[in-house]
Image (cartoon, rainbow, N blue to C red; front, side):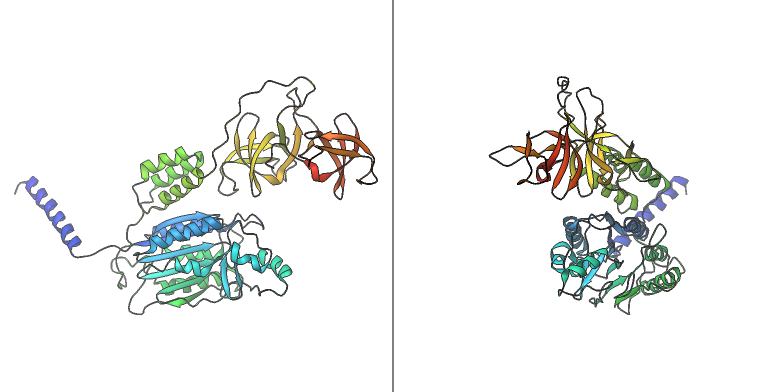
Length: 503
């Protein structure tokens, strides 16, 4: 038989085999996962590891054939939105897995996950600011074969201490998380068993996340055994201080594997290759790293144009999340046209803040693409004394514009206010505040010889916008110096700093 005819017959045979396979009803499992790492808390000290733990677990789940949605540093609205979208996606899926790393709290027997913008001062705030785990459980109800929630959220919680001091006779705030009895074919895995505290870890990842990521990608390890292995690793890594625990049960007639056994393995009902393995090639990873270094929407678009057809790939899903987060940032304000310099001796129209003394070892403040030390790419290093305008604020971050027009986010902890830029265009050595809006009918602030409105004699009426130095404070009064050298006392209620900050 001619060689070309033989090749054609082999090709036809391959097509027929594929058609027979499709007609047999065989279908790959659909596995989905939502992975959340909350670390950039706005009202308590930040957690360094949860976003890194989430990225580690997301990568492992992607290698196990899951379509992974990776999220980090979600506020209350963002957390609710992510859970709602995942609930819709879980309908009809075979496996639905939700992993959360960050702060959690138990109160009155109910477990809650803590968004990064939560402000918990008393027990009454919890229902409004936090998200109950019951709502998390409902997000995986639609999965058909296995539903799993993994909570690496039992860290020592700084909210609880303050709440216990202020709540008085309110509801008890527990240690760790409370026991959950999930429904059939549902597992809830805790990084530390009910009522105990998990450790955040001294290294790059928490002990629980490191152990879970290691065993999750091992072929032929059933889910029940996988979590026993994780438990042993964590106990060893923490000197028996932390013991993970799994609540719930699985059907006994079926075997569950994150990564099924390979050919010749110990079989089981899922003894077939993991569905849709992600093509995490060196090219994909290299291109992702290049786009991450650039850190713009255009860079992520270029990456997705090249790799966007690789559905379920870890780096593709991560790139989509990075692009979405970057695109959601408010657009930078247009750079105003240059204004003519005011007459000599008159104040300039722009008040500048500046980089104050920064903590060692780095004598500079980073300007970043996002309001996050872990997610925001560094645009430049601003040395002490760098002048800029503060355009708006978000939590502990300020969106600033440098004198050359460069814009980005900087940590407000190292920003001082104000440095007045005189008409000469040179930075002043003096930090100025100013008289803010004052109530009618008198739109001025009194400068007095004593810190008292009744006994202090009025030295001058200071109009709104008057520049002044605050030399010291005494209660609600400030001892100030005007630009002509006059000194006296003024009520701090009507003193503002800086003009560029939102009121």
